Image: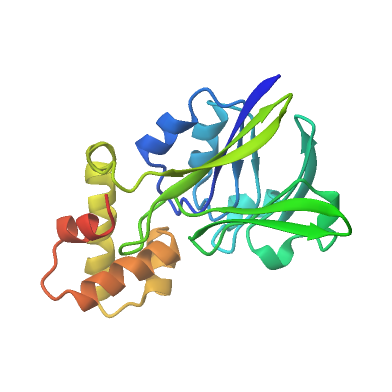
Length: 223
């Protein structure tokens, strides 16, 4: 048996083309929350069966998603939540425990009661925060065992910029326009349907870089 699981988190309205490319051929996909648009799950489901949890930025349609999942797949026991605090406390019962939220990749081996678990955060593969890397993880399962690979996508910027293009630029311009009218990120998110965390990031870049354009903000976000 040889199976491959793609693990992503914190897409925040943005499913990068290079992420879609990396997930091709996977037997399953895990999304650790902060999806923000149902269409992202629809796209992922066309690649492979998907398991997803609800993040703190997932509303409305996402109410059908659980905040914590516990399941078995390909002979491994998994627990998944967006925030690590929502993971079950009985660590020894699971081979892999997955979470997101921090936008930082982490893979820690934890031993409890003689049992070892992997606590894994794939990082964020949505809009890049300043110089933070854009990452995901790949879990390879074979009869002889399993291992996790960290995949960094930050350097592959051109395809993402070409594919995201006018759609993301239009969102950034909308946020800037609304901000100039005196509205804050939360109000902008409600009025426009743009993810609040994305709106906050755009406003932050706009305020801290006077005169920056939508193209400049996209460049600073690694798009």
